[in-house]
Image (cartoon, rainbow, N blue to C red; front, side, top):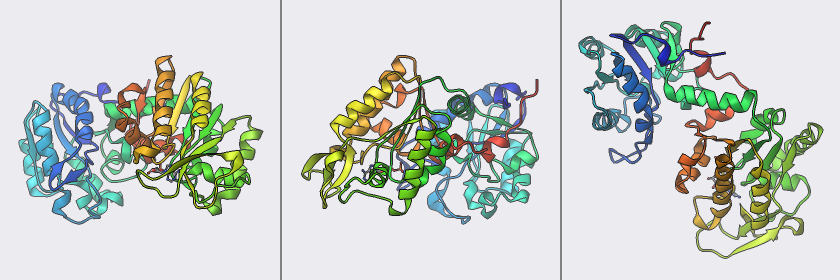
Length: 399
Ligand code: AMP
């Protein structure tokens, strides 16, 4: 099912209300990372070049429906002014006379940024009145905020009930890559999962068992699987109430002929801190009490690298260890490099947002994958096979 994109609609002199993801980190009123603003530029610039009047909506942080100045989009509008070659205006309101006046004055080729959508209580409740109001400001809605696609809010989903909604370029790219992995992945399709908890990933693992050829499991979640197999995991992080779930997943994998690959060794320490004594333990020999596994070990790196080498599609979500601490970052780095090597041989590689995207960034590899998703939660739900409200609401292309 093809979705309408910005390219499919006439934008000349049209008022376009665009939901972007300007949820950038801000410290003491200063933007510390403007990647998301830069990422939105091609979509905004295209609309301006086609003669649209662009009204931008975004959330920033979690002000919970209150006007909280620390979450104002003003610094974002100012940064946008520096990045784009067009007049950029800002109104410190989300609705009302000031907004309507600014919209009526807006000319083709100009940008107006409205205040944080989450200053409105109705935003996260998908309030129809609020959605209708925002829709009344424009002719067309552009949805370019994939990171919120798993949430039905007024600014991304509600508006689409009143005016046509089309995908922006970021959204289009997310749909293209994630659908490719979900619908007919080139085989072998290898999935690498890590991170803190099995419980966050049960849904996605179950769906991937019907699609993937191999699932490699690292991160803290590996210990829940290893414990379920009766291994000694010492003081490693285990979800004690998920042992049955882990067993069930392993049985399902066997029944479906999916190779589920678990680590054979781990780098452990007695404290989750930089500079402490580290030891490598083989999983078959067990991890002693008092020691916790904080990264995959060298034999596992070799094993996983080999399992990734012939992949034609890779989806990676979750770090292999506590990558934020350099002592335990090696596993994540080496696996990221193995995925990059597969990509160089023609494999389609998708990094599923959140911590894996942060890790890819930390190792300077973010540009080397086929696609780094901007939405951690949204990409996981997509690969769970769920219909995301923020994609379902985009108009379908008819032909
Ligand atoms: P998630 O948000 O589920 O992707 O989890 C990411 C977090 O898992 C990161 O902050 C990692 O530091 C953490 N993590 C990865 N491996 C381990 C481990 N072996 N023990 C404890 N925490 C871990």
